[in-house]
Image 1 (cartoon, rainbow, N blue to C red):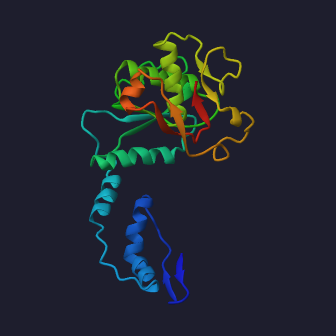
Image 2: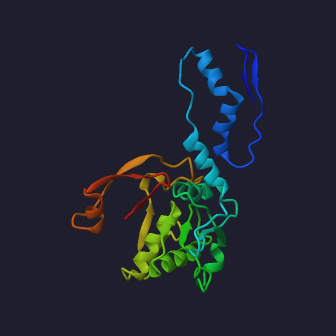
Image 3: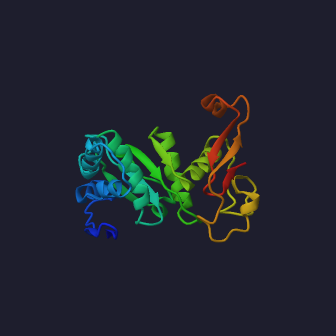
Length: 240
């Protein structure tokens, strides 16, 4: 509920049916934006919300998918992955298409992918912590790479892709993360030194960007065009 004491105006409580994308339109319909401008004595033009309405409409049409392309799959420990579903919503809306999403339990892939991915157009492995479901995520990353399916790894999803590549392309058979196996002989993912004592992982870990040095002559240097880039360190992990 929004209330302006000075003007004694009350904005009715929002009943948002779909997503947060409704909020700006609802607030505009209730006159909150104009109320704020009046209180601040700002003279502004009428807001043009045409693009926002189009975006909202596209997000609503999640069942209108690309024909004959299949859906995308999410591999995670939990079924409540709304923060990751928004990523796919944004991507689909930007292309003016919908989503056909299939959720897959990572633990069911621990012994192999079988035919669970044969009809998908892309793979998303979200973030998380802990070893549970890790081998299934690694198998999902391998399947996507070998079948040349678009792959999006968020946080832990990128880490398992690194482990998979190290094992099956670089030949480092026991490649792993120290988070999964602290005594692993070939860790390609390791907690930062200053984060090793952290127990409650998440927002308590180091956040923000951090300079990452790239080895000269590598494909990474060619892609970035530099030997140093700023990378996201929200997970407190580094490639070694």
